[in-house]
Length: 304
Length: 234
Image 1 (cartoon, each protein chain N blue to C red):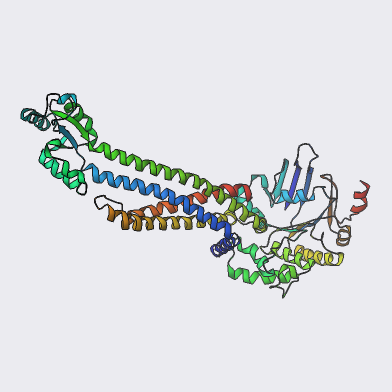
Image 2 (cartoon, helix red, strand yellow; image 1 turned 90 degrees about the vertical axis):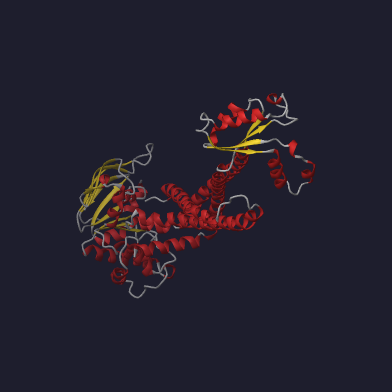
């Protein structure tokens, strides 16, 4: 009986305040969409990190004819220097850091180059002796790049030691900033949502002050008086959260899955299943937002 | 049933207290008129009994319990034992007579079956048989006040507080309301009625407690009230 009564109170409250309820739904929808977008970006970054960190290598480029670094002053790398470098990479000193070493000759480098720039006219003008030969080093721990860099970069015959991870880091930092930006927008919208929920509850409390006054007098408990208000806000926010979840799912399915994944088949993208993991978090966040802000408002506007 | 011990209530430190060291005892099943001009402290008395406000000094006992010691979550229980009626009826305009009375039972979690059984009974007690489905605006002032009384007693409180219940009604209608209150009182409910209607007080011949400027100036067992002339004299 009491439950049915509370439900009917909620229903009448929602109907009476329809325009405010809709604005609460929309604002929570937008703010949670941005929260979710930030979450998706983080998921994507993790996905790409997992995918790429297994593949990134440290490349030890060897001197060619026109290398400019001081260690190449003596001209292109000699057979002897190459063997020393390989020996060092495979020595016991470096086994804790180095997982595997591969040698890439100038001809192989040209092959990779041609693959990579297949559609570019530059390919025709490049010859094998312009490209450096290199050792491709897979590290046990990709973070330990500095160890290799220090040991090899000044070795005679070594032009430059480059860490592919650095390139990725740049991509990730762009994505991190984008997700930070999304969080910032989400923060502003969340403040809007909280204030709007507070205002809605206030209006609702005002339009029902007669009922709550009588409830107080006949000894209704605090829960019966306040619950309809709190649930009104929570229901609106949860609807907003569901809309946000739908929008994010649609985005990941049709924009990422349908378009980006086709355009960039090499890249690992998040799947729409992973988006579904965000849904409970968004709903919880929306409900919490509404619950806390309506509780605080009620304390001021609905005396018990 | 209600006991005030040297109760003082100060709303604003600069003005005189609304109640000034009032001591008063109302027994079970008593009918008491609380009379006095506006601002004499009648409404403050009612607010203190309901724990809408707390006494600044002194103690208020309701049904043997010092209300100052009732924690806020137990206040609803205190109020379930007290019915209240106001001058302005305070009905819900968009609910029928039946729904208005039923509302008081719904909000404290009474079952539908109990409500269906009790509400018509109570409406009969206050003389509103057959008006279950009327809306408040279709009723006369006296009938609206009867609905309010029905709502106040539907949960069978031990105490009924009436704050100028006849203030908006003509003398004939007022007497009808008084009969209803008298009947409720004779069923064992303690009734405290604040009023400044001397005709009613003089007709009923009940206990009269007169307040002036927040102090009890008179407490007669079967008293009368000549309030208006005194109020003008001040």
